[in-house]
Image (cartoon, rainbow, N blue to C red; front, side, top):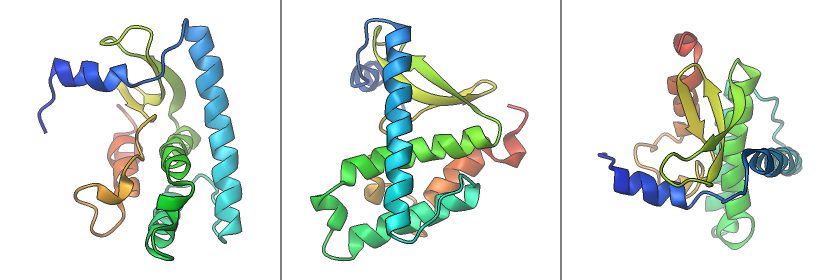
Length: 161
């Protein structure tokens, strides 16, 4: 997919707006912590333990599709956006557990708009909308895209980035 400055401005303009980096860090890191606590509790209620390993990304994606498909779209009716946001945050938590760092990204295209991100070397992945519409992602027939994205961006073969 081609990207353009206009598309970058549009996407970054949807990130939350904060008056300063300090406020953005406080709010986004707080949201991260609440989201991870919610996800780990929610997963436990569905007999899934998340220890922040790369293999847990597969378990999380399995849970997502099991809940989405079983019971007539359970996620559609209840906590879908919360779950999808938490999927992105959990990808970040796994990356941080294996050498990345949490960061706050300030958009160069939409000043004052910030995203929760993970960084390692020159790579920064913004997580705010990462899990949105996960069931409609292309190239995910085997339902292992979360793990593949982790391996591509943060896996062992990418340690030197």
